[in-house]
Image (spheres, rainbow, N blue to C red):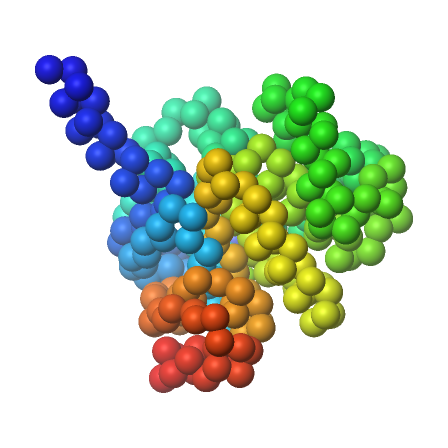
Length: 264
Ligand SMILES: Nc1ncnc2c1ncn2[C@@H]1O[C@H](COP(=O)(O)OP(=O)(O)O)[C@@H](O)[C@H]1O
Ligand SMILES: [Mg+2]
């Protein structure tokens, strides 16, 4: 009965469609004779469309976790499912497609190509993925506009401020409507007013993409930024130290207090 098999396959993969399931993940770096245990057994589930902030002291493993979810590196132990795909089981070709289409990434270096205009940088991944057409170009212009970059489309990165480069990287990451957006301290270079504008813009852009809800995992050490999330996960020494839900009335002060409480 194929429909039952179909149904089973659907339950298998669609439960966490768009979501992330991390189980028992460990990662140790070796530096000559020294070893650094960056992740020491992490279990995290992020629901489809959920907006999660990861907080933790410097060196607690936040960037490592994001890199593993983006398939830029592989864990020593444990498993990671993103959008129903077991990352360890992907072929080379599937891995390339995953990096180009399933996830959008914004890392601390924005990786903009210096010789390309802002618009061409936003379009770069789409071109690499063979997804470029007029409607993608229009969406790129729309997204850039929504992120306050309408007047900057023809500028090259060296003519842009740090904040504008960051927003260009976000537009590029969102262009192909990824199921999952992974961002590592995306407002690290912005003053608090620009950072606030940025989070509100991001939430607005995400709310527009109603056809496919985007799951967001953002690393931040700023309680004010974490206040925009649905939930905060706290890492300490490569382990999940705690987590808490964010309510509408939560502000930077209450997030900071709950963060400290999770660490205590
Ligand atoms: N490529 C690497 N080689 C060696 N050590 C690393 C590497 N990446 C991270 N580490 C170490 O792993 C630990 C966790 O790093 P990271 O995930 O970058 O933490 P965070 O982003 O929370 O500051 C740190 O002690 C860091 O020095
Ligand atoms: Mg980091």
